[in-house]
Amino acid sequence: MNIPLAAVDAQTYWLSAKLPSDQFLLYVFDGVVGLDEVRAGLIERARACPDLTVRIGDDSRRRYPRWVPAPVRGAQFHGHEAGLTWTGCLDAVAALAADQLDARDTAWRLHLFPAVTGAPTARGPATVAVVQIVHALADGTRTAELAGWLLGRPTPVLPIAAAKPGSLLRAGIAAGRAHRELDRDIAAGSIEPAPPPRPPLPTNSCGAGPPRIRTLICDRAALAGRHTVTVGALAAIGTALAEQLGEQLGETDLVAEVPLRKSGARLARNHFRNVGIALHPGEPQRADRIAAELAAARRRADHPAAGAEDRALAAVPAALLRWGTGRFDPAVRPPAVTGHTVVSSINRGPADLRLGGLPVLASAGYPALSPMMGLTHGVHGLGEVVAVSVHAGTGFELDAYLSRLALALPLA
Image 1 (cartoon, rainbow, N blue to C red):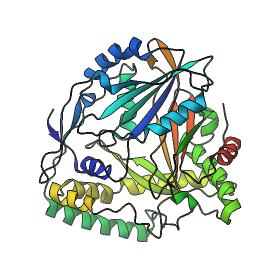
Image 2: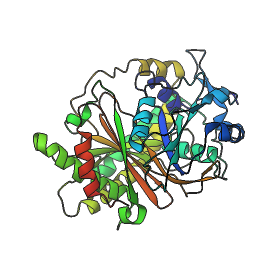
Image 3: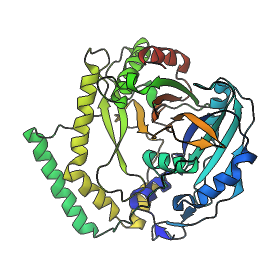
Image 4: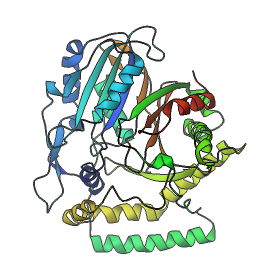
């Protein structure tokens, strides 16, 4: 494999130098197994997956970085202290974010925490596996596929077709026409406009201290209710967060930034766009309102203007995109934001994973924080279990918020 990164993946890679974005996929297995017992099997499965045998080669500023072959090494598997409590394990996982991967050396790593006590849904001590993956290699949906294969799922991960960049001039002209068509459709009422940016709230600041992560476990059917797991989680998060922030400033106009998977063929490893979804806290029919907003966001995302915009980005020369990405300053605070928190909701498939013969119980994830985002949520389903996770920066009263969120969620 010696394939150029798609433009959006290269942009993600370059931005990671300023905004750390490694993903951490956590899996709880019922029972205890040590790294020495499973390392050989994990290496064998990794070697059988093309996307787990690559790194990034970036040796020219005039062209896009490339995916180049990289052998699977034993050093990619890290064993951690045995016998941690569940809370202690989560604290240790949160600390892993301080050691971001260098994708020029390795694009993923696996951490193993054996004999964790008090893990949710476990009958006794559990084993926690955490797969760390650079965002340029895969988005949330594809990381679940890669981690699933590594941890025993029989379904191979399908390769991604290489995108053809095309002409920037033609793609730019087409994108301009499509955007004007979108404006006409919005004016005619056939497409709803995107929600306007909102003023930032205290959650739009990360703080300088160590972050914390926590996870609550729900039953899939109870959380979905009449809608979907995503809608149910957004409604609960809106309720809890409005109560939390209401004590500080009386603010209830809350918006979540939600990654939305793109329709159509996947031509890049990052195949999603972020949309703003108002949470309507306090409204009796907030779940219906949230479901309608998600449907409207999907219609905007499926409009020809969105695809034309993607094709225009794909046609940007590497040197120009690298220059533009380099000018991004994460310290600049804009006057308005797309969301006051991030909620990433992904179905990680059936509970068919095994680690050293141990069955999987649950899976969780913790979207990265940034200078403008001090509170994120992960909603991850595995089988009939859904983990609703919180990643909070310094200064946010996480314990009080978790108590409110637990009351708003149908906990298992």
